[in-house]
Image 1 (cartoon, one colour):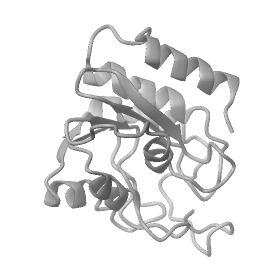
Image 2: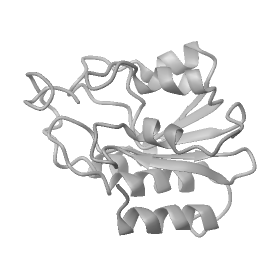
Image 3: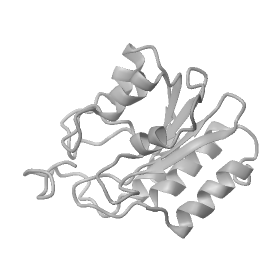
Image 4: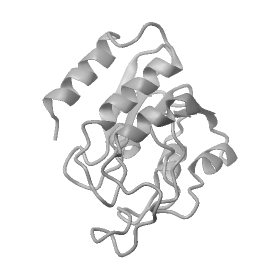
Length: 181
């Protein structure tokens, strides 16, 4: 499901309107802007992702729950890729660390990113211990040979899209009832 806000951000990404140049911070801000379009869920983070080719062109974008399902942002961006996209030299910008464990699908995002062959991932915020005791998404990516950059100066901006969550205290219960999505 696409929203007018998402369409505007996507159009700006493709036209380069939000890009003062191929700058990791500016591209991460685009991912964070997409996270603001996520339908809030008390059992999941709001995350945005922008997948960019080596030449700086936007290959695809995604955000959590964009189609009404429990789809994660990284998964949505990978699904939206054009056929034949070169991912070894591409960079995936994520507002939040890709998940290393997942209750709503058989494969976590870190595994999907590695399987797709994405060469580099840039994140703004490490996943807090709300749904998973210790997310290891960045470690799993690094262990698989993916270049990983963390831009912690963007963590607060990414966190703001998640004001609907009780950050600081763990949720309990099965998915949909206080557990992770």
